[in-house]
Image (cartoon, rainbow, N blue to C red):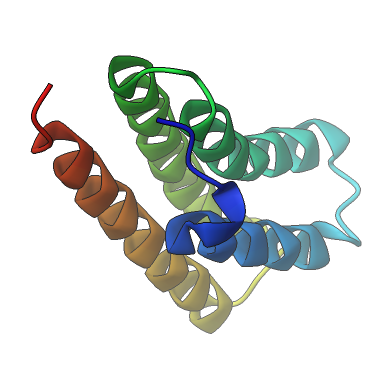
Length: 118
C-alpha cells in the first residue's frame, strides 16, 4: 500500500505551491493571517504525504479529503490576500489556478484508489 510521496505528481505540485505561498507572504506583517494561510497550504502537502504512508486505502482517502478541504481554505484566503493588498489580482488568479490543478489531481488520485479492488 505504501506510496512514495516523491512519485506523486500532486504532492510535487503542492510542494511548489507551498513555496509560492511562503514567497508571497514573506513581507506580510499580519502574523495571524500569514500563519493561517501558510499552515493551510502546508496541510495540503502534508496530508497527501501522511495519507500515502497511512497503511490503508481508507485512511489515504480520508487524508486526501482533508487535503482538498485545505485547498478550498487557501483558495478562499487568496481573495483576502488580494483585498488586503498582499497580492495582485493576477497573482491571486495564478495561485488559484495552481490550487485547481492540485485539487483536480487529488480527485484523480482519490478516484484511482477508490476504483481498486479491495
